[in-house]
Image (cartoon, rainbow, N blue to C red; front, side, top):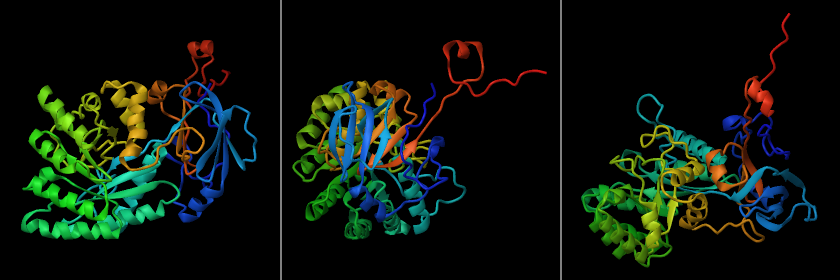
Length: 436
């Protein structure tokens, strides 16, 4: 009764090993594999869906071609994956990562922001998150100060090298945008957008003139047609009201997070702020695993997700820090974020998972995914039969991006030899050698 691997073709080079003992991509394959994904047909056999059905799913051209009862689909597939014992879900997405600072918590001495080093960290972090199931990542990247646009250049290089494995997009995060000191930041923000940053961000709370900072960001976003994704603790109701008033109607939209400070406001004040954000169409990305380094750590409370959802605010959940100054043990696992929302945030398990999948994709401007014909083949298969069980014991995972298996983690649980293990027919590590 071991949690064994499904039988499937290995998409990875021989000898590549991923986290948890499963196989993983040894190096990014680049554009050749992105093209291959578009021409590959794949049949997923015997997958369980959240409604209890067991189905076969045919993928092709990066999309779901057909979903039918097990054994019902004709099989022109070039490859098959046996998903017996797995729950098939829309893949998660990571709406709030920090690839430039990831994996720096254990280093000795000052953190290097050389282009090669940042690219390596951003690539490794994105692959870590891909292994957990996130087939799309939005990475907030600091620009300005002594490092200029170097970190942005590095993360954009990582984005290109990862094409075909995961979709990595960047948010340009300047420190200051107002006053004399902010003039350079504004010029650099414009350059970052020209380089390829697709989202405009920053932290108004840290600027001497938060309203001026927000005005500059919204003006530039409207000029370039970019979405906005801002860091804020959310503990100043007046500031949130001004943000809602200024951001309302901006297309393609405004997201703020992690907003842990909303949990520290009086209940009536928090309700009023939530109503204002909902009316303006401002989304919130919470970070159940902890704050990120872009904000001072003012407390470990997560945004009041149930309160925000009740007001009509669209709430997604992200991971934030991945082993950096914001959270030295951050895992970057969307299923852990969903687990925390279900165990501590008061959400039902399906709602919690939706916050890291459908809601996260919506916040990132990505197409909706359902396990139905015609939808993008962005899928995650996890060992288990119900979402609640998957969130508590999400060990073995198969990740599908653009219709191709791009990552796999397999776990086998064994118990030592004992009377109870024998009685229950549990898997054992080994048998004792017979005595002399």
